[in-house]
Length: 466
Image (cartoon, rainbow, N blue to C red; front, side, top):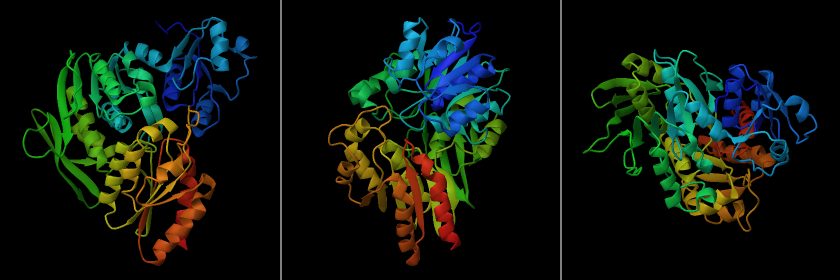
């Protein structure tokens, strides 16, 4: 399918991070873009400010006037076809495509550098995009988060035929892509409401890997199947003695608040690279991104500059407050492996502080499927406040709730509603500071917990100032 002659695109679920990137892309290409989302958010407001019309109800009365017969309708996989707007478009003969199908068509018109994995893909793809976008190679990018460097989830470079894409495994979406080169960061089981079993989940990565044309850069130790046509490279951070990956980092250290390491390729070493966001978990993400940048021809100087100037991704270990008494960090982590990586980074950055986590479980099914792992990892914190489960696309599951998850935990844990978080936090931080005990507060989760960040930052700042 060629979109060049399509006048209008209508996005159902336009406020999602992936959908909004596609909407911005087609708007930048000169197409008319409209859409629907359930609730206004800062992202939908930004889209409207950019000239994209958005409706927040399912009223179909204006669609005949707004959408000519040639309109392409795109829906997020999280919205079912029986939703009222979808049904209206289907009964009136409009093509209704999933976002992944449209993204797949776009990637077939370019050299797609795709980043797949249970976790790490948003940060890794954003680092890769930042390195290449600032290099002589150039790159377009569809990002799974808002880049702090660019304040957007879409990068446009009309001189480049390269596009960096986050390859989402939800609903097997990444099977629609045609990757030129791919990174595979991890294959820890997730989305078992879709896949059923961990084996089926991992088999989907083998199918995805078979689609890659030129090269795969995969975390050392992962098995991605045997039906591979691309050249396979491995990567790792801080390897142990013995057989090392093709790309790796070593000599990792923090000096005067700067995180430095040496990056090794199959043929060379770039010493003393500084990571702009000094978080330990990002060393591994950076190695994968630098590997692909190196394969695409970015120079040593461009790779070094890209890493040093990288400012991070919204809601990926964002430090909102950092004082000797209290620090506050917000992170998108919502899978046990992601939570452990964030907590481990927290312990390394703040080794002598009390760690308070505020976690909002995301999805009833994910909470049910990984409850024991969630409980074990969250219990690494000194204290936890659990918010009610954020349902997203799901209906409640009998007996699966935050109280049930709390019963499995071994650290001090409390159930708190969003509206009561700041009063609860005031009490806990007051108690610690009265004992001269510095602390770190961390909000964690993929739901709407980010709506609390400004309020928490304000209340903690006021406490320090008093």
